[in-house]
Amino acid sequence: MQFELRPFAPPIRVYRHRSTHHLSAVTVDGRPVDLARGTVLDEPPPLHGEEWALALAPGTPVLQMWIPGSATLIDLREVTRTMRAAEALFERLAAETAPVGVIGESWRLDPQVLRFMPSTAGVQDLQLACQLLPSTLGEAQTLRRLFGPDVTRGDLAGLDATRLSPAHRAIVEFLKDGRNELRARLGFVLREELSRMPVWG
Image 1 (spheres, rainbow, N blue to C red):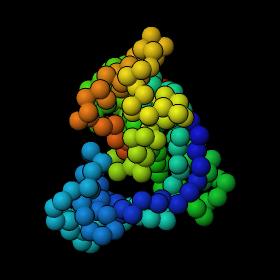
Image 2 (cartoon, rainbow, N blue to C red):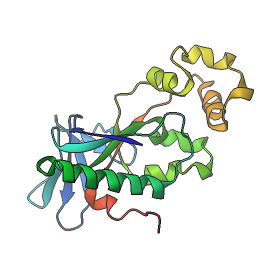
Image 3 (cartoon, helix red, strand yellow):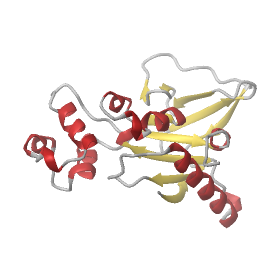
């Protein structure tokens, strides 16, 4: 994994309940966000009174994390260990801009992938550990990351399946149905949640 300290960019505010520690999110223009699925909802926004504290907003320092695009096997404990180490390092390097959490965008965070990813990949664990937000990564960009810089959706049917990993073959099969679309998500883990995640003993 690679990390970079940067301001949180999405136009979304995340609040934490002072008693229950539950998280709730809204876009800056007031639309609620489903943090389990990473979608913006078409319904009245939740009310965030004095019992809610702002936990994440545009401009808040966070660590952007990149997982290698070819990696399909994920061990949540190892990812957690790496995130904690990176957070501690950046806090020592720049205490005045200590990150409040870690964010990352990936096709693995699309809830749909649980339909075709093997259970041993740890993808479900990663999705459950993160809160999900909409991503700026489109399907075309995601496919280029997965299959090569010149590959489009129309090229997938012509790929040699014997040279693809099981995960890549599953994605090709999923996208054969024109109604399906691979949608990346932005996942985030705030410091409080990160402190409770499992690591190597």
